Length: 86
Image (cartoon, rainbow, N blue to C red; front, side, top):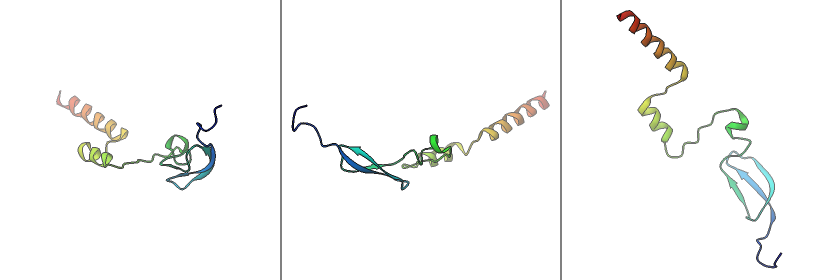
């Protein structure tokens, strides 16, 4: 390896927005993360919406809070009304 062209590889402390910290090695002086394995929904099994621009709120305002159970009930209600009108 050539001398003087590679960045310094040092031990740093990584910090997540949830408060978790751990030691790792990096070429950067500090690591600040928004999401990690301690708070990511894939690893925890909990759903956590990260909405920085209000997109989820706008969607629910436009389309309403729809759930799978609600859609099934609406479909069953629509089938009953169609059968009754025949």
